Structures are given as structure tokens and as C-alpha cells.
Image (cartoon, rainbow, N blue to C red; front, side):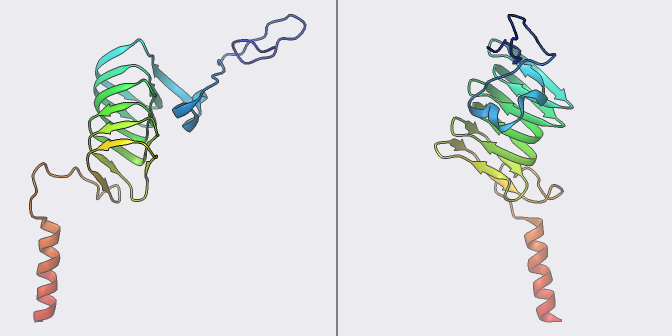
Amino acid sequence: MTSIFGKKKQDGESRSSDKPSFNSKGPQKMAETSKVETVIGPDATLKGEIHTRGTLRVDGNVEGKIKADGSVIIGEKGVVTAEITASLVIIGGTVHGKVNGREKVEILSTGRLHGDVITKPARFVVAEGVIFEGRCTMGKAEEVKPAPSKPQPSDAGQQEIGAASKGAAG
């Protein structure tokens, strides 16, 4: 028989550890729950800015801005209306806002993203059945910048055209 904290009871004795065991299904499997340092529970609503050095898991509601040096995990019932910046962003719930994943952005089959994604090349993973309304920009970390709100001529494209025409003329 197993106790709530994941340790087996021996001879009617209850043993526990410092960390509870989480038997999880869905988005939780994507990141080791023992490393989640901050959790916003399903009954919580938070408005404002959040900055964490570790991993943040959102199962409730957040409005504002989220910045994590580690990962941000949005659980299936999590609803976030915010700009998210983190090393790894895993979306299993609903997000309204820009998502900047310095290393990777993953939207699970239960995820919904209404906003733009910025991440490294080939590090944007979208499962079958996802709702994604927005744009995705991929490039090297120093090259990835938010797309302009209106279509504008690219300075880089003009420089390339100018360099090509100089090379042809000279």
C-alpha cells in the first residue's frame, strides 16, 4: 500500500518523504514535477508580473507577464493572458499572448495558443489537434525579434539587394 507521499507503508507504519509524489497525466509528463518550484493552483487567480528563476506551473488563471529563467508549464486547465518568456514553454491549457521560448515552445494536443511564438529554429512543436492562431518566428536567439505590427520593408532585405547590385556592377 502506498501513502500520499509515495512511500510504501510497512507493517502498518506510515513513512513519508519531504516531496509528495504526483501521479500525473497529460502536460505534467513533459517536465519532471519534482523540479517544479512554483505552482499556481487551479483555484488561484493572479494578476501582475511573475519572475521565477526555476520552473513555474500554472493550473489556474494568470493575467500580466510571466518571466522564468527555467520553464513555464501551462496545465490543461490553466488559462494565461500574458506575455510569457522562458527557456522552455509547454502549453497544455489556453494562452492569450506572445510566447518567447528561448530554447523550445511545445503545444500539447490539449493546448490552445492565441498569440505569436518566438523560438529557435526547429524548436517549435505542435501536437495534432492544437488550436494555434498567430505567427511563429524562428531564428538564432540574437536574431529573433518580435515581428512588426504592420508589414514594413525589411532593412536587411534592402541591404542584401544593395550588396547584390553592387557586386554585379563592380
